[in-house]
Image (cartoon, rainbow, N blue to C red; front, side):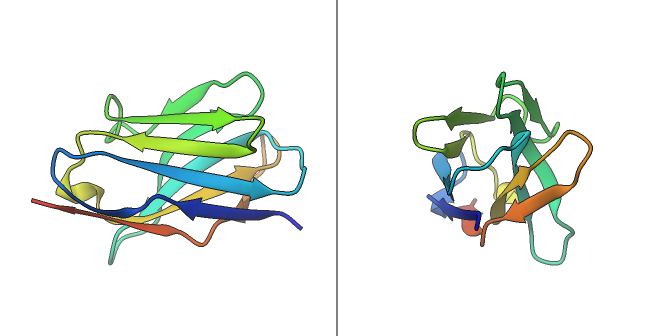
Length: 118
């Protein structure tokens, strides 16, 4: 059974930083890990992803230059370093695992709240 558990959310003022973590339980093969977010009244949106093998990264335009995704093989964990946070970054952040290149993200965490005040 694959489980993803996010942590590191919280409340910060605009301009501040947070680092989210997503720990995966169990050993499983995956193509990529991603971070998504959902703000109140809005649809869930892609934030960033990283290929598990090779480490290529991809970002939404709204977070480029401010957020950095990374992974730690030994800890089976993916991170999202968020700098220069803005009020519009306020959302519940989810991590997810994509099992193959052409598949949807299959496993999701429970989410962690990030609140940025102005």
